[in-house]
Length: 101
View 1 (cartoon, rainbow, N blue to C red):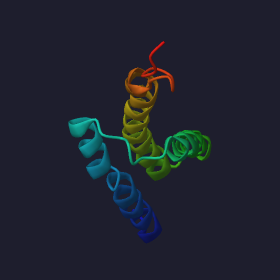
View 2 (cartoon, one colour):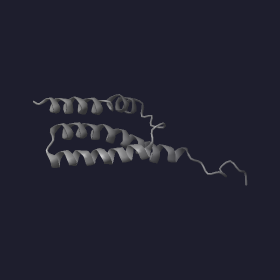
View 3 (cartoon, rainbow, N blue to C red):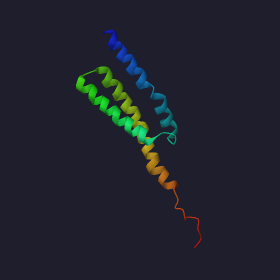
């Protein structure tokens, strides 16, 4: 393996597994309040694009790193979307809910 390939795999490993602590935290606590839905949506689509790109150029480091990152970011995004749609819907009350008729 060439030095540049080793650099690619090490860099891919580091950037991919940097998401692991965040994914573990979100999966354990289900707390996504401080996470940006727009950021995780855009990021996940971008990582999917990198995965396809890696497949097209047949680069193992790009493919593996982005597939793992896609899995982790998709988990976080799915929990965030669930929290936004299902959990926040029930907590919203109309502005006139406490008014007496």
